Length: 324
Ligand code: AHR
Image (cartoon, rainbow, N blue to C red; front, side, top):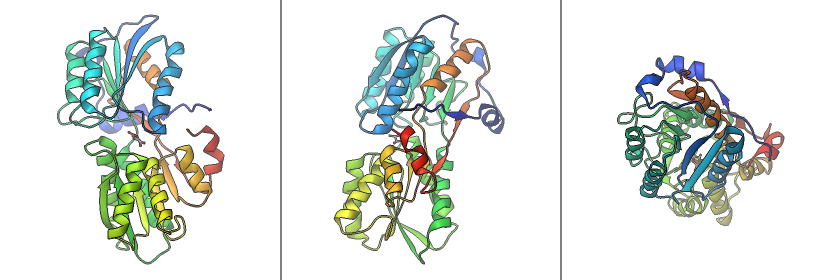
């Protein structure tokens, strides 16, 4: 698989937010040949998570990391305990994708108290409680509100029916991508009175749960003709449920989603899915770059923002070989 380096716009993000991390207020990181690095993954039940963990492993040797990678198996409590264990093992730096916004705050605070610089990757925590530049160094990741907004924009531009009856499959309750992808989509679609969201329910970012929830919602809303899924795994699950019910995804139901997995790009090529807005899991090289800059004393923006592409029938075949 070809690994893609994430596109970032740190200067723009820092300027937009109007603030940058003040290195001297945070735990420092000395410059040295090798670092003991913690990566506390939340779960490994989908291709996105597996690709993200692999990206850290693939980066480790070249970046001088002695990597301790854990898998919390879908439990926020275990993810906190995994960070506790990493602190006890004396890690120099922590990379943390917090499963949910609030339950992972203790992990961030404990790493801060232990003098370990922490970078949140791909997901964030509640910014009213734990702040970049103060409790952790920075957030490395996408603009999830913008992703939801772009999914809605594509739908509004490409839907050719009179009335769009939308079912929304939400990600993990209390996670930053679920909160923000919902907000971005709902706010944008509210401006177009052709559309109504008739149901919005969590599928926990999982294919099988997405399928089950779609099966149930289809009974209550047989007239659904649009599915917005917060990730590709749930979108694929929804396609399975729709096909089992005799519906034709891509013909009588428009599917819009987020991520850019191999299965989603194939579904676009097959005409079953309309769009997937990219959310890249390849954080290893970016984590290395930002960590080295931080160790060198450079100012790190509070949000190192990842730029996302969009995949449709016009370009899915061009990108499927680099997908995961
Ligand atoms: O945090 C990013 C989301 O988490 C991805 O969209 C999803 O597939 C993953 O589980």
